[in-house]
Length: 338
Image (tube, rainbow, N blue to C red; front, side):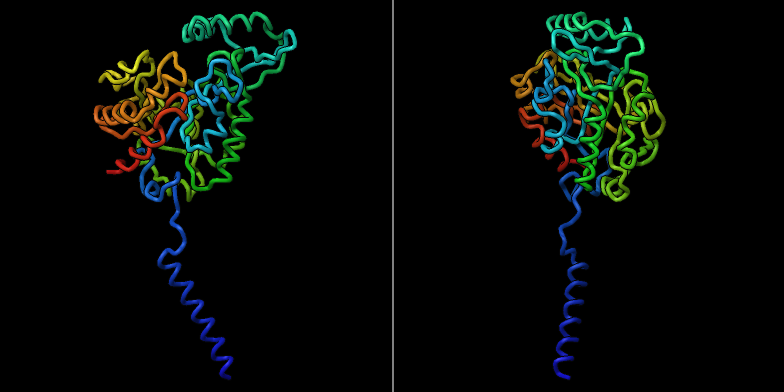
């Protein structure tokens, strides 16, 4: 009898202990994007470390890279905002080398050439002429490239799978992806199917969700387009009122420091998300290290937030490993939500 009573008391004590631990939150609190504090903040109150031309990496074999590491490594390092460019292309071979020939009409071709330095444009056009256009009816795929796939390309399906694997492995993370769609936007639909269960529908006319609500719902990747519009789940981020941005053509650190660097560019003034475009053109690791230094980046982010009357959300830089991007984003997030 005494042994039975001792057993009952032991079971009851264990139940009480488990209950008490649950009530006191003995388990680690849920984190959102690496911080418990961010869970209570709305999407438009959170700063995301961002990579400009995220696919255009030295690790990925791109000839004139804007990043050192590829997107998988960017995710591992804490980048949560991605600016990527999508094109149609066809693999062509010449002299034993495979090159992705970019599908561009004459006006797009001229526009792309103007965005490059002279040496970059010459190299892209040389490679393009070397392989020549594909025969009519040749299969096309969607690639992520910067202006010309001839200078480097990665299948979009491969990158989307990288995002999917990350989201599956990291259930408390929220991502924001902006696609510069240099193709019929409808071609993106099959490419993004594997992310369908994660894509959030954001209504910019209503209060934006908190990161915790996005995590709990599972709808925790925001995807928007720059040119096309595929409806509420894949909107045009500028025309549909979700994102407003700063200018992005800066030739010097001095230009980044000017008040005019915060002036409105694309997007409406009442859009809830603010994209800080923060890089130099042309750029490299050395200039990125200076631009991404805290005294430049954090000062500009605070100045633009004040000038625009809202928090900076997407902090997009070149060579994110250089400088102080992640420290700056942590400081912005400590200041956010007030």
